[in-house]
Length: 263
Image 1 (cartoon, rainbow, N blue to C red):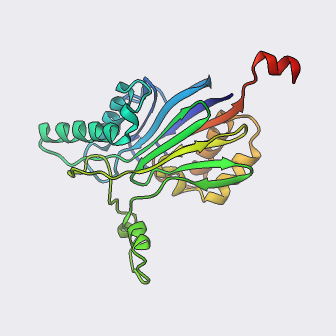
Image 2 (cartoon, rainbow, N blue to C red; image 1 turned 120 degrees about the vertical axis):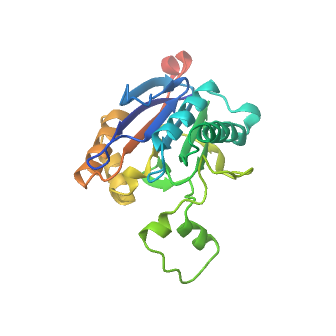
């Protein structure tokens, strides 16, 4: 039987005045006031977790990510009827409701979420906060970015002259005023002992290349916390230009007493 251990760490970085990231693990969420910068869990057979990155440049990005995390906590570790759209629509509605009540203002957040049950994972993402699976020595991105660059690639446009701002502009996110969010969803991901799920805000991937992330995961033998701490350190050492949140979920095989006795 596969159980999971996890560790989350968030850091505002070296440039941004506040941390607009938030995260949720079942009923836990990091408050707007940055009441907690880390969280851990051990030997869980079931976990629902997410990382939310308030959109930089928008007003109240930290509020949007906080609302998303708090809303996720309300679902008590379950995806109603197996439909992630129910979760996202509730988040989106609450963010838009807040925005309308206040000024109105523009606000938004990305979402990178995972549900693990009995050794099977499913993921859902909106925006550009990535989700990776590290398995058998290989790091693979299993989320899909919702950016102008990715849209151009999907449409097989051969020549696009985007500047840095244009190519990273989000095409989907929480807070968008749209009746259909159309997230990226992957289900039935079979997990094995030694597999690692990595969720992060783009503060990690904008500072650390995938190859370096894979080397850190491979080289760190101290478990989830050691990996998360090393990834945050690398992002900070490379400039720390954005808020960075890293959630590491490690899989291990829990043997029954019969297996432990008889092998």
